[in-house]
Amino acid sequence: MNTKMTAAIAAIFSFASTSAWANPHRWQLNMTEGVTEVSRAVQTLHMQIFYICVVIGALVFGAMFYSMYKFRKSKGAVAATWSHSTVAEIIWTVVPIVILVVMCIPATRVLYQMYDTSKPEMTVAVTGYQWLWEYEYQGENVKISSRLDREADQTRRLNSGRDPYAVKDYLLNVDNRLILPINTKIRFVITADDVIHAWWVPAFSIKQDAIPGFINEAWTRIDEVGVYRGQCAELCGKDHGFMPIVVEAVTKAEFQTRLAQMRAEQNPLDPQPVLAGAPALTASSFE
Image 1 (cartoon, rainbow, N blue to C red):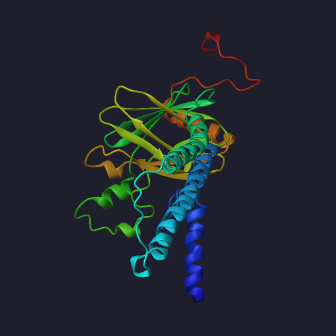
Image 2 (tube, rainbow, N blue to C red):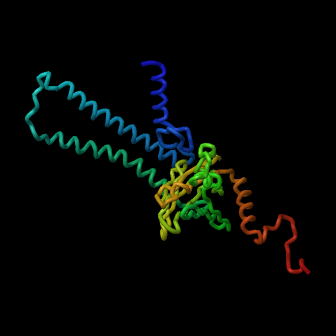
Image 3 (tube, helix red, strand yellow):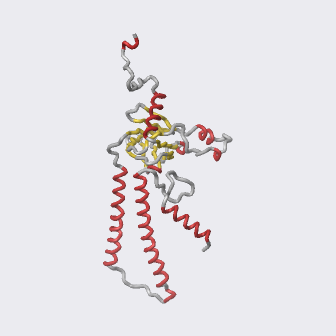
């Protein structure tokens, strides 16, 4: 085997075993490792079960090919005449049960972790529409809509004359990103206003249905500053492929600044907090 072939095979197995990218990319062979505690737990569980399946496959196919080669008719092998073995039936019943139980224990632990939305530090309401997302920061009086950015929207239309390859992150950008702080447990309450959508961000290991009349929950705690992309994962109509999700994770201090900016833009007449040391305004202040 030449050096190039060896390097190619090594690269394939390295991609299959680990993933160093927070967002999916071209020719990715494995799921993303992500940037949250849950996403890493899901990826670890995935690889554990994958290796168990590899061992099972190697044993089963190894035994099958060995038997086909060792006991082939051309070598004078004669088929056995027995039709029943209680011992064999017990073995092929008990062994799969044990394997399933072994796989079930870590899977149940991860599922419990994924659905534990208790004690959040902040809550974001997510509502799906045809064809955009609406985000409301609960208790902050801030609400934003997020849809496909204008450049990509104009490029995708028929007879636009624009080259999609010239548009950066084509069909993956939005006009308003969802801004979230890192190292904060964030609870999402997810629903829809018209048809069924699904809010999916691979880097967070979140894919939750948005169903009209129902509220589903999810949560995340982002570990790293960055931009993470997702999409609607439920066929919701003709523009289903044009409602991306973009989450920008920032530090807690920057998040408070950005949140204050959004609040001021959306609610310019709201009373502003009094600065420390400044005299409080009363009715006599305007006389």
